[in-house]
Length: 269
Image 1 (cartoon, rainbow, N blue to C red):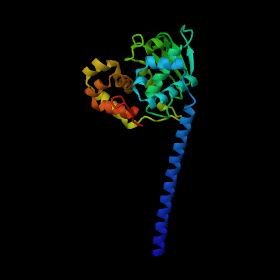
Image 2: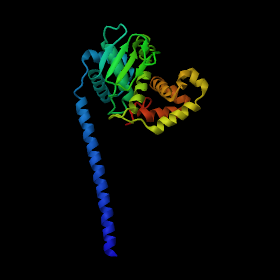
Image 3: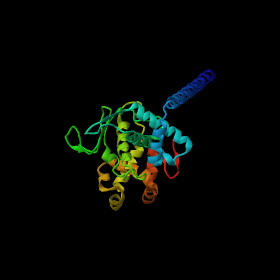
Image 4: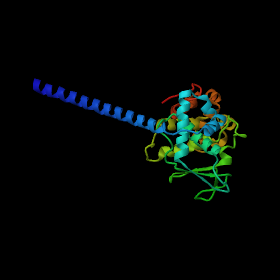
């Protein structure tokens, strides 16, 4: 009996040790991957001119800490260097300002996720106007497909900028849709958004006051949960005080989903 009991205890200890080792290996492995990615990111730098554009036009960048600024700059530089920018519809080239603003929006929306870079979207096609023809032949403001192509209309992207007004940026709306699409693609950035949070967001959309939707969100936000998320992202960053006032539950859900808190001025990862 004692022998059997001893064997049983030894088995429990062995299993515990194996689990501990497995956890330790995963922990060390994740740390090594994180360190490698930080080292890789450190090689990306913005030129003084590119940095001046970012400082002049991007309010989010100016609002974060010095340490976060450094990371933000590196991620913007990486975005610009690894993506292919293509012009259509009469545009002669993609300017430095356009590249910086597109990249900065992509970085802002993913800033709570250190390892998410919207890798799937390797090519960004930029049109001057809303004249994009999709497979179904209808004009679109933007399109994100499974072939790694992000199609944007520059007029739409900066429509709310008012001559690069720092307070408004429809690009956040477009990048929020890209974030949702990237989350569904089975690659190294797959399934990083909380399913539970997205479900709760869907429930909040159904329960949301219609008058508030009209006043702040616009009726189009009720088209589906993706549009509701995209509009919520824009308001979350631009008018967080108002969003928290009208719905503290929606505000908290956005903090959870994006791992950022504009009013706390801190990242949540």
